[in-house]
Image (cartoon, rainbow, N blue to C red; front, side):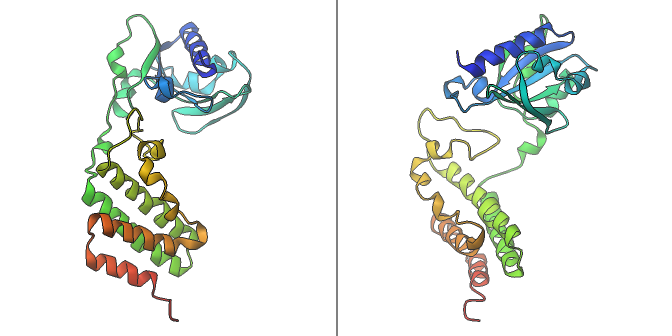
Length: 256
């Protein structure tokens, strides 16, 4: 058993020995995707507790600290923490009461421990309404093109940091989504419902070799925009009016 999974079992026992724990749900590589776990993996989990006791588990992390020395922790959401043990085991977790689970989105997990009588169906994956937005080719192309347009304008305005964000982050992210819609994935490589960048190089090895063509750094957002625009046009036949407006905007100062 890996160090991470051994620590997960220790956490499960600690929750079981606490007064108001109901279940421990492991997610990601600690859950149903344990074939992915390696020395760099962290522990993602939900602690599910009795109604009215959530804040007790969040305000006092003794149920984690008594297992092993903790080097660092901070509350990163209203529901949970990121925590690093001194031996290098890194945890990201949230605490929920049963009635909250139907209002959050999470992927398939593995129940490590549950109190007798706990309704295991509460741990079935739930898709939040916000995740039901239509995100097809038209959506990602439209977002990518408008991100480029806004980003190039901000670059010329002198907002180079915002331009970098719009061009080499937002627009490029939608380019990745388009790749995922069109290309078959490599066998035996799992994706991540909430973060397309995870294992992207392994899932789309042919595309992995050209990603550096689009990610050029803070001072080269205009060239990155031009390359992303060209890729979108080559592979998706984008609106030519929009293409020309972005292209002209990229080059508007070339001869000044």
